[in-house]
Each structure stands twice: as structure tokens, then as C-alpha cells.
Length: 217
Ligand code: 5GP
Image 1 (tube, protein in one colour):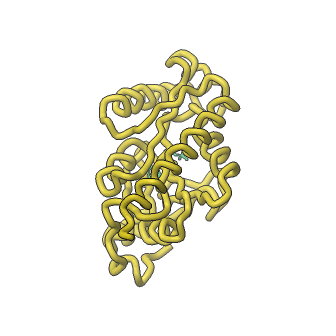
Image 2: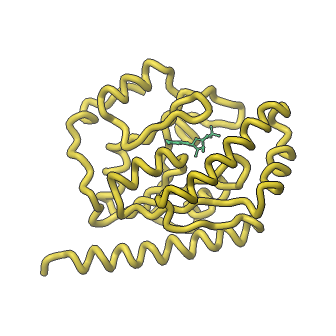
Image 3: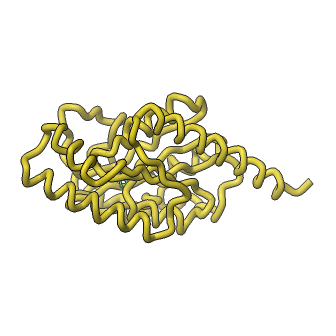
């Protein structure tokens, strides 16, 4: 993926969107955030999932353009230089970023735009768009998170230990940084999905109300 000709010239985001709502979903590895994110996307008809750019290697489970846009380091750097990202961050030594122009277009169409991003990215987005609604998914306990990471059988013990340490750091940071509007504990996956849907629908009604209150008559 190369920078779009318009990326650098696209108007900057307004501090608050006046129609669509931006939804941030974060959480540590193994907490079930992708399933919860996709559950929200399926249940809210005009929602769209933001497909991030990443320099991480594509796995067998990944579909280009659906899970991520896979780019190399130079391509990612070109996008940074073209000021094409709403936010970007280094996660586990690889870069991940959200294309600003696409997000803006979707918001202007009044959509619910879902970003599944880490805490660093969420901080950047909230600083630019305080109106974004942000959810952090928590495990029922750290022991349970470790058990879930081990049961995925995807990684070596060393990699699991690294992910677990990173998850502990991320949870502590999410609780301390005051960026998240709400926390959802994923004890039961279906209940967590329903809680997320309910909270997003409520946030959306409140957002639309704020927008119409601010519209000059
Ligand atoms: P994975 O490689 O396991 O799919 O994702 C690793 C981490 O990167 C997850 O915490 C995920 O939420 C985060 N991530 C994915 N896309 C983005 C993005 O565009 N920006 C940021 N800041 N983080 C992202």
C-alpha cells in the first residue's frame, strides 16, 4: 500500500465528529477482543471495521484487506511521512497504524467506525478526537488470562511469558491513563459481546443527542 495522493492534503480531523461515532476497542492478547469486536460489528448494521496497516508477518489465518493491510517497513514509513495515519504504534516490535482518510470518510457518512488498537494508539486517537468512545476488555483475572494464552497452543512458553508480561503492563496502563470510557470483563464471551453492544448503542444515542443539540437551528 502506498500513500494516497490525497492523504497529506486531506483536511485535519475536527476535534469532535459531528455525525459518525468512532469506537475504540482495546485489550491484551488472549482476552477475546477480536471476537467481541466482530460481534459488535455484526450487530450494528452501519458499523465498519477499520483494517489497519501492519508490518507484522501475515499468518495463515490472516486475510489481506480483511484482517490487515500487510506492508513492508519502507511502505509503512512512507505512510508516516505522508502524514497518512490517524495513529500508529509499535506493538511487539512491529508497526500498526490506522489510515486517517478512510476513517474520516466513514465518519462523514455517519457510520460507527470500529478501531481495534492498543493503548498507545487509543491515547493518540482520544487526544485528537475526545468524542471517540473507548472500551478496554479485561480478563476475569490475570491467572485466567495466562491459562487462556497457554490454551491457544500457538506459541512457545517463552513467547507466552512475553505476551503475559506485556498484557499485565497494558492492563495497568489502561487503568491508569484515563483514556477508556468503560471496562468490560470477559468472563463469559457471549455476555461480554452483549454488554459491549448495549454500551455502544447507548453511547451512540448520547452522541447523536449531543450532535443535534449543537446543530444551529
Ligand atoms: P495482532 O498482531 O495480534 O493482530 O495485534 C497485536 C496488537 O496490535 C493488538 O493489541 C491490536 O489491538 C494492536 N493493533 C492492531 N491494529 C492496530 C493499529 O492500527 N494501531 C494500533 N495502535 N494498534 C493496533
